Image 1 (cartoon, helix red, strand yellow):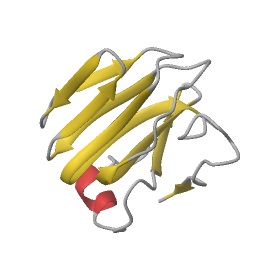
Image 2: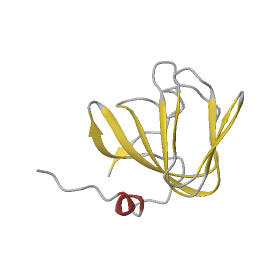
Image 3: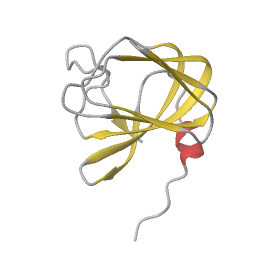
Length: 117
């Protein structure tokens, strides 16, 4: 049996924003934590949905037809192909779930390299 994953401990291991860290794997999906602050880029994922769960702080997900605002304990799934831009006015901690290998910008040429912690 493996040990539980403490998300707060994992988040304490890094300070970079918009740089997801893989903390586990579930059915071929990466379980990641990320610290967000400021604006991310407008992007979409043509083949996958985008899952956001706010652990701490507030996240605004800008969509072309209106925004979704999330606080701690709230989640939102952006459907595949929908252009969006996450924005965090204050440092915000998130749990993100994506199929393994999914580029965080939707484009492998501009995506951040994900590392496991």
